[in-house]
Image (cartoon, rainbow, N blue to C red; front, side, top):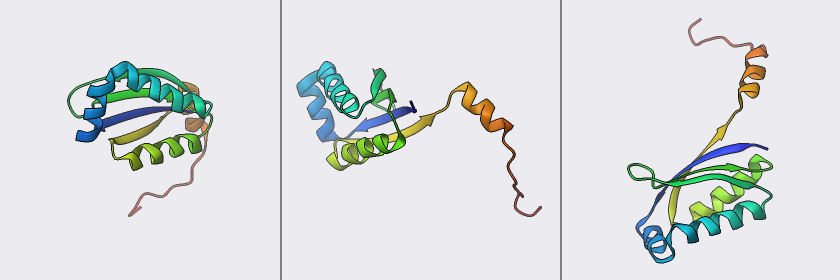
Length: 106
C-alpha cells in the first residue's frame, strides 16, 4: 500500500478548532477519514516550527491520497504537503531500470 508523509500547518481557524477539540479529537477525525478510504494511520505527531502536524499514512492508491488532500485544502483549516514515501526495495528496483536521458547541453 502506498505510504505518504503529510506535513501540515494550521490556519488561524484550524488552530481554534484544535484548541476546542484537542489533539485526540483531531486524531479521531484523521483516522475516520483515512480508514473510510481503506487506509491506515501509521503515525501522527504534533510539532512546532514550520509544521504543526506530521503524519505517516498508508492508502490503497494515490487517488485516495489526492481525494483527502483536495478535501482538506478546500476546508481552509490547513495548508498541507504530501510526499510519497518509497521503500528500499522500490528504490533498488528503480535503480535497476534503464532510463534514456540526455542532460541539457550534452
